[in-house]
Image 1 (tube, protein in one colour):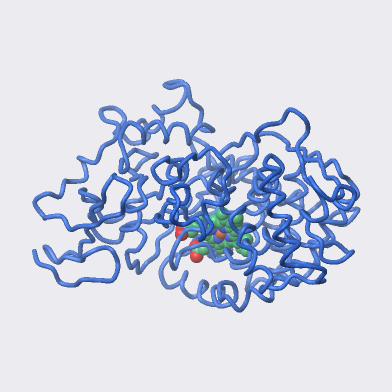
Image 2 (cartoon, rainbow, N blue to C red; image 1 turned 45 degrees about the horizontal axis):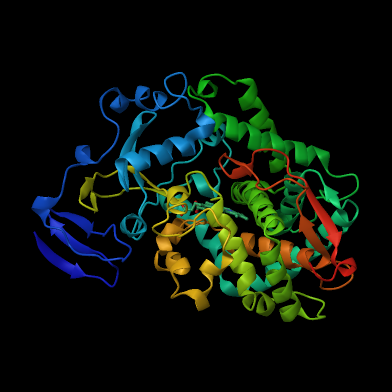
Length: 495
Ligand code: HEM
């Protein structure tokens, strides 16, 4: 074995038995340190800590983690993973269905897996979508494709969606939608189902992005056909994801036909040649952002002192100007910190980013073979005291550069501890759009001028509510309907 190349990345590449190996060692202490590991010290895959015995049997192994064999249902999957992580450590292997998966719960280990220069970019997609495309012969969306086919679709989408200059176009596009959303809120003041309202807002904003037209979800008599189709799509996707035995693969079950019908409604919105791309953007962009915004707004409602700091930042940056520009957004570091902190506290995606290895990889001291699904366990890392002191507290300051040297901001040294949008070429193509949608939704204006939701309204929770419980679906959602109270700020200039 000999060193063939030193990279600027914190890994070294070795040639051994004609295989490239990425080798990283990490310390469990707070400091991030990397060193190489000798070939003879590398432990084989089967020695990666994880449940043993019957737990290693395909299907049975994962079934044993849930009722009736344990106190947990599939809805408690994050508790199951947390418990296993506490038992087995930062790298563990588990049966998930037929195959093994490897969970990585340390940012330095994650770096090795995610900075690997993947060629095929294999994504493990949702089975129900795969079945649907196979049965109907329709084109697959971006999130399901691999290799050349994926690249051909991803390249133009990325050009349009991820260039920083493109952000400027989103701001006015979302701004008009936000104006209507604020008008709607002004008709209510007590919002009894915040997620449903935000769902309409994100459907309308992503609709502008995908179809460049308003879809009517914020109208007084909203587009019920579309809203129902979207609800059916997300519910059936969720149900299929949790099914222990995927019967819909063999029969056109009731759940499957509801999913298929929802797709047909969405396909009608778009021209056939772009259906694959836009329906995946549209589908990927609504539920994720609406759920994320619920937690941003409720965290601010539960932390009035932070809400006031944000309100002051918005007032200072916007003054009496009529339009939010990207320059304004670039000055709102507290706003961005508030959004990040909500995403950290309630991590938005169950399995976040995951990669299928394209070569043998050495991670930590273990060998991970080719074609293995490796999951970036951000959900655990974000609650980990080692990276985020006082993890249960809502502390936006931990993300601000000016606090970088303070213990509370330790997480800034661990970029892979928090990747809500994934990473690299297969990272979320909607990241910039989603961020702007959230920033502007939280910070932007009314028909009166540039007064944000925060500037317009003081948000609070009904008396006695101290937390918003969540459930880990594909995207993390509030467990129950969330009510928030809005008070016009101009009646109450100070909190
Ligand atoms: C808060 C909101 C969002 C979150 C947390 C989120 C999260 C993610 C994550 C974790 C991935 C996988 C990344 C990886 O494997 O490295 C992903 C992929 C993707 N996201 Fe998002 N997303 C959000 C909003 C959006 C929006 C608004 C859109 C569309 C407008 C979108 C479209 C997509 C698509 C199409 C993919 C697949 C990309 C590919 O496979 O090339 N997402 N998202």
